[in-house]
Image (cartoon, rainbow, N blue to C red; front, side, top):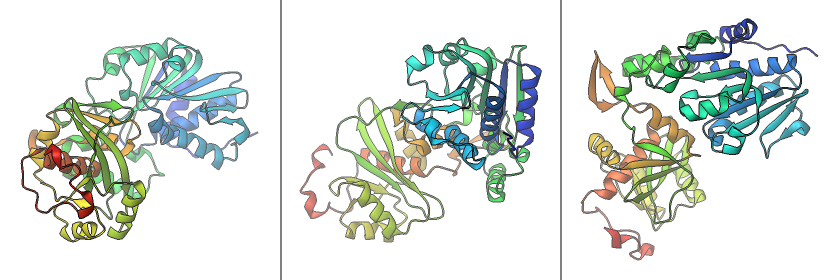
Amino acid sequence: MELNLKGTIVLEKILDAIKQGYRICILEGGTGSSKTYSLCQAIILLAFQEDGQVFTIARKTLPALKTSAMRDFFNILKQAELYDPEKHNKTDNIYQFRNNLIEFISVEDPLRVRSRRRQYLWLNEALEFSLEDWRQLSIRTEKMIFLDYNPSNPYSWIYDEIFPRDDKIIIPSTYKNNPFLHLDVAKEIEHYKEIDENYWRIYGLGLKGIIKTVIFDNWDYCDELPEGEPIYGLDFGYNSPSGLVKIRIKDEGFYLKELLYERFLTNQDLIKKIEEIGVPKTREIYPDSAEPQRIEEMKRAGFWVIPSDKDVKKGIDTMKSRKIYITKDSLNLIQEIKKYSWKEREGKILDEPVPINDHLLSGARYAIHTHLRERSYPYTPPKDVGGVGWDHY
């Protein structure tokens, strides 16, 4: 059986690192450089050559893994007409490829992290892992370890723990190393250089970031939202995504869950989506106040809509006043908060965020800041609300 794959220079360098016998192969680079896709191809090629081996592909959370490395891996197999559904255990996220076992795990499952041994390990988006995660996984890996990431955190344990080692190789890459990248995506990446120097440095040039520009370092994962009455934040979009966030506010923090992240929705489409999601018409929705026509249409559909206070700096300060918890399945929201940064020009940090990929965060900011501040609401809730929810103002 032959396997022909179209690969980038990144794949060639990975295969060369395997041939040279390095213990650790680090793919550090910008977005769109084919790091994840190339590693999927490399694992498949290795599995063609090996026999009776265990390959572990890991990420911090399972939902993120399913939409990144796992999706690319099975897409490559299907395109090569190698995928066999009989060999795919979707319950345990295991695939039997030839005589090798390929498993997809998250570090949320400590038994799978600390129990079985493996020959090959791949940490997808390695900056998400803790030093303890790394140590537990690496000591149970007999042959080779791969790591990939965008260098957004210059203080990661990776630079102290792995970079000094003699048995590692670092493969840098940028979007220019990927000839298969869609032209519009390349243009979007290049747009970063005009918006924010640090963002361009990390995701365009693939260079180590400067942590001082990151806005939110007060967040963590959670499994579910706690009990209590929710509020909702909404950022209107069309060419850019419309974003809807469900929020519960507790003394110990703000709890956020992504409900909607979708482009090309008219207002009627959006209203239908919100109804399908099951947002109660007895709970407050805080949208972008700069869209009065869309707000009015939502009101006429029966939703309790309160135009938001759009003061960006004050809204950010409010969100930084408590710990933020984000459900692990809120994939787009997690990516937004990781990359949300202050603008930087000529070495100076500006008191203004980079207006890129902030749709869900904007919705959350509208809701949290407007809900908590003292104000007189510009209209009363719909008649069918019956006063529900007003007792806590």
